[in-house]
Length: 139
Image 1 (cartoon, rainbow, N blue to C red):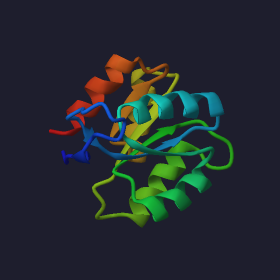
Image 2 (spheres, rainbow, N blue to C red):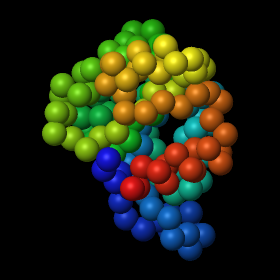
Image 3 (cartoon, rainbow, N blue to C red):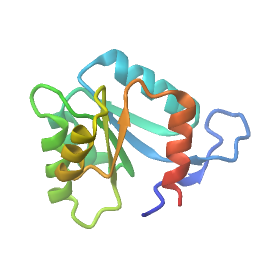
Image 4 (tube, rainbow, N blue to C red):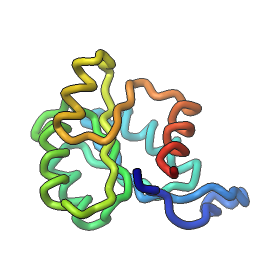
């Protein structure tokens, strides 16, 4: 497992000693994107958002995020196809791709793993759970 978080975090002016990551959030629901983005930005992370898989692919090419958090069910291109394409386009990348879904059954998690997702989060993600999850990626 690779560390994804780079650099010192003082963007919010809080003097925090956390770390900053380039994160791409992909969700077709604006409210979900905005809430997760605000939470991560308040912790000092560099966050970009996309409303579908095509937008996400373009942003990933430009920004090279360390972490992609993607909804799995979206129109245009779903999270499963997005993950497959990211893995093909960036085969040597250290980019982590995390599924974000309202479904948390073992079969949902298995399908996400088969599609290439590195991990799985269930909506709604509690701030404490998200912080714990991000810290686990540093190891």
